[in-house]
Figure (cartoon, helix red, strand yellow):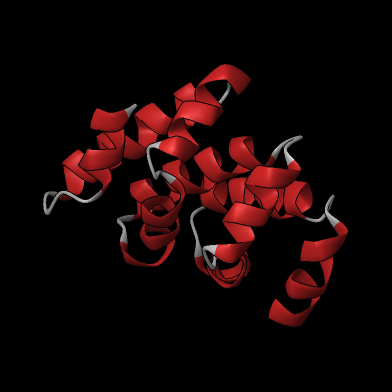
Length: 123
């Protein structure tokens, strides 16, 4: 997990994509999610939503989608990291899979009443 988080900050785009892909896969398991959050995965995943390649955006949105599913703590951390505006932006400008992941991430985030207002304000 820590290695994948480090890959997100790499200068090489392919390395960022590999890290985001690994975190997306790992985030499917609730047990891995705690380790990911503790390793600081959320802020760099959010950064990839705006600065990453198209593939990195797909993978980052997918990881955030999984992290936001069923965890109010993760939902708050994702919202606090500024993920809502770039996720909303992906709905109109991303690749099809990025749009799907962004929509699902926003849907998971909307389960928290605290993030509903932020989602509505973002678009």
